Image (cartoon, rainbow, N blue to C red; front, side, top):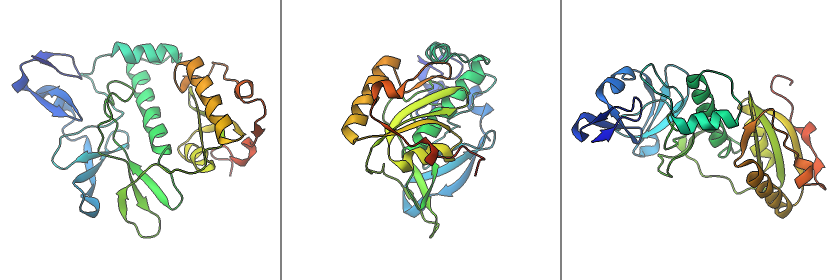
Length: 252
């Protein structure tokens, strides 16, 4: 017997279909049959297709011929995942269970996209094993993160930049705070995806790495409630405040 990841119904293996890395029953598959629209087919000859959700607009990469669904949207047959609700409580989210789940998934996708930002490219889509149901990455299986070249229009798989990592940053996505380390481009990518810069400190790569590890151990992850006090200066007292370099969305 297998369990539908969306409605939790237990069914014989032959009555479920692998969709977006997980097992779905026929009724749940039917609900999202027309959800995803193909926007890029086999870019550069790669065995990958890029789809866009007709419900929320989020994009996802997928293997050719694989049934898929949105990384963010749940549906009327979805049931709450206890693990995701635990995350929602830790983040002090006050919406319905579905709204909380979709907010967590949406923020997870935006954070993932920001990691692949690089000048001259527009990040199009990614693939996170476990979304939208778990709210976080289950396994490392993925069809990759894809981007479009601003000059040529070429679509290809992106690799994470290895730029100098000398910033410790704190940004806000709606009701969620996200801290991390990275280059100026990384912080700019978060802002371009709608994040509001709260505090950005510059220091040596080693100092920033140690400071981030301390924060992550203290807060059990990199996403916390907007009401959680996250003190960057406590873990990086000699950091240089460069927040003014990153204007808030809409202030330009």
